[in-house]
Length: 265
Image 1 (cartoon, helix red, strand yellow):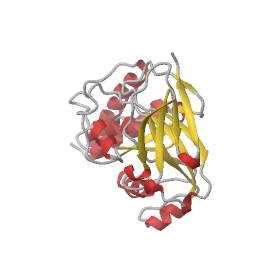
Image 2 (cartoon, rainbow, N blue to C red):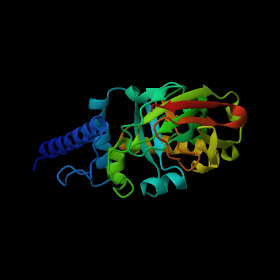
Image 3 (spheres, one colour):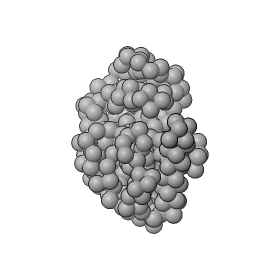
Image 4 (cartoon, rainbow, N blue to C red):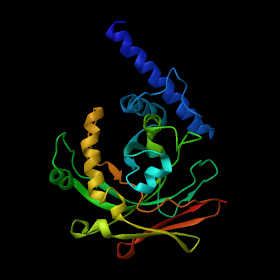
């Protein structure tokens, strides 16, 4: 097969897979798996599908990291992190009322999120990556999957599914974050005024900074870079607790502040 024909076939497969995922995303139906003819075989294939999702979901504004903690890896059945695009249409403000009816995973996460001030070139050192950060924020992520059995579907299909991207809430900026020891900083998730999970920044690849650097190193593998203005939410600091209709969720970061959301009844 000529090279251009082979590339065209690969693009058509990625387009078809992205359309199936997007249809599940918007309809609330769940996929058992992508069909054999369009199922990604490796992470490069999964990334190609995720890129095509943008044609359906619209503009992105940053990245989420899945499975940067042991709890997150266990939850989706993989052994290492995955990057997923954050799409603007699923972004919400603190205090928002969110719809849980269409959610499949039905969990919530307290996270540290970086906002980039400058582009990060391929091959940047840890110091260069961190120097490119403009701010650190408190955040809540409500991840989700378009696959019925997301815990056994595998890394390639999860990457195609934007690494379980769902709803995202960016909270207040943290002043003086560069002087903080994030690896030991405690977080608590409260649901309906009850503390249900506790954790620390150390659950995020040992330190949220390390998760950010991992992403900056990983994106060039897929032909992408970390860009100025993008938000990077680094992964759950606790075991993700379940939520349901009518729940009030509060992510408490101690002296750094808190933020909350509500789920509609």
